[in-house]
Image (cartoon, rainbow, N blue to C red; front, top):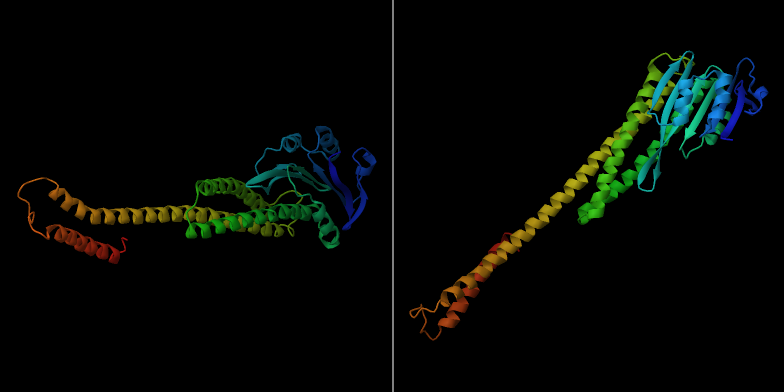
Length: 322
């Protein structure tokens, strides 16, 4: 069975467990509601809940295939909410999907690919009966908030890696593998940003628009979910900018290093051009050459070469070309 947890709640407390194989356990009294958590259920298991709670066939089909972007669908007096979960898988961001059916007397969560179960959230809410008394709408807020809270550790982990890259780029040049990692991170952040936009829209709709099963006094709670999504989106945009800056910094430092090497080569070429030119003149084998018969001509030429080369060396050193 794919049922992770299924209980009936009333007056803010857990009443009894639900067994999908026993229709009697799905009977609800006035003021009670069912909270059922499923993980990658089969069509037969969802079919039982569809028959009992009147779930819309299109919503059930979406929950089975799990390839939706975050959204809200209204089917009569029921809500169908799709949220996307995220987690780090080594050097990439992995995604899952949580589909939520919300009715007056039930909330059903269907998880696909999510590594974070809702058991801890359920225990937290059961420890606070005043929250459970709000009913299914507050649980919907709690589930969405739980999903969105999982985004921040991802961004923080990437942020630490980006800052380490930034420090490394200042101290030394980035390797090809590190540059490839920069572009991979930018691609992951762009994909992540495509999830954050619709998630913010879902929270905004739940906050500002009247929806079935959502009381007016609970709607402000969704503002907190929206604010969390906006914070993560802002951090994501900032990280994309920093990654671009790291790459530009590495490129500028590499250009600076190449410029320094070019100046050094040009300086040494200018210095070596002096003895090359003088030696070339005296190697032309003409009979009448300057100071050719002079006893100290050879020493004088070498001395002239040394003086000119020394002068050029000092000048280039002063200009920091050497």
